[in-house]
Image (tube, rainbow, N blue to C red; front, side, top):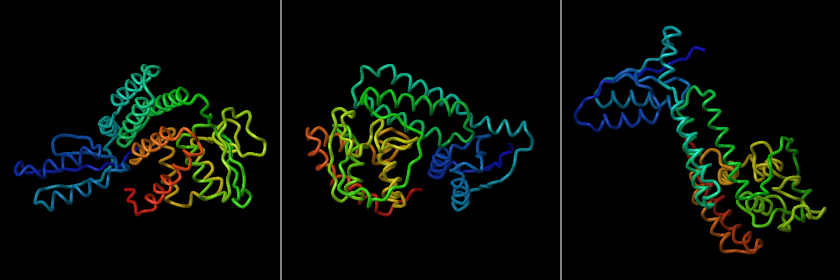
Length: 318
C-alpha cells in the first residue's frame, strides 16, 4: 500500500544554537526519520504530521531555509526504504524484556512496586505506539504481553477480580433503580468505589451498599456489581464503572467520560492518564485510613466529587 510522505528539508544556522535545538527537539517528538542531515521524512497519516508544517513556518520566520514536500515514494523499493526508517522492532523487544523483568519479580514485589511498574510499562507502550506508524506483529505482541502481565498482577493482588465477558450492555432507566441495595466485594478499590459514587450521585437517590466477604452469599434482592456473575461487571475492555455509566446513558457527559478513563487506567491500565498516579495514591491513602468500608465510601465520595468537578473544567485534549 502506497504511503503519502512529508519530506522536510531544512538548512539551519550554526549560531545562535537556539533555533537548531528547538527544531531538533520538535523533530524528535514527531518520530520523524532522518534521510540525511537536514532532511526528515514522516508519513502523512502520523498524528504528529502537523508539527512538520509548523516547523517549516518556524524555520522560515527565523530567517532560515525550509521546504516541506508532500509526495509518494518513487517506487516500491523507495517505499520500503522509507518505511525502514520507522522500524520499531528493537523498541518492542526492549519493552518485552521490561515486561519479562517485571514478571520475574511478580511474587517478590510489593503492591506499590507492581502498580508503579505497570504504570511505567503502560507509559512506555503508549510512547512507542505514538511513533509506531506501521504497526505489525511486534506491536500486537507487546500489547498482548502487557495485557497478560496486567491480568497476572491483578489476580495476585485481587484473586477475586472479575473476568471480562462479551455480553451486550442493555440500556437501563434510573427510575427503575431507586432505593435498591447494591452489593460488591469488600475492601473496594477504585472501580468499585467509583461505581458506588456514580450510583449515589447519578442513578439511585436512596441506595444502600453492602460489602460481601463471599459473593455467593449476595442477597437475591441486591444488585451485584464488579464480580463474576454480577448484574454489572467488566464487559469487553470496559471496567464496571464504564459498564454502569454506559448502561444508564451517562457517557454523553464529557467530564464523566474523562473520569471513566481515569478509573479505567487505575483499575486495569490502558492509555496513561495524567491524573492517575496522584488519584491512585489518594484512594490508597483513604483505604489505609478507613478499615470500615462504609466509612471508606463516605470519605471517598467528596474526593470523587472534587475530581469530577475538575474534569468539568475546560480541558485541552490536544
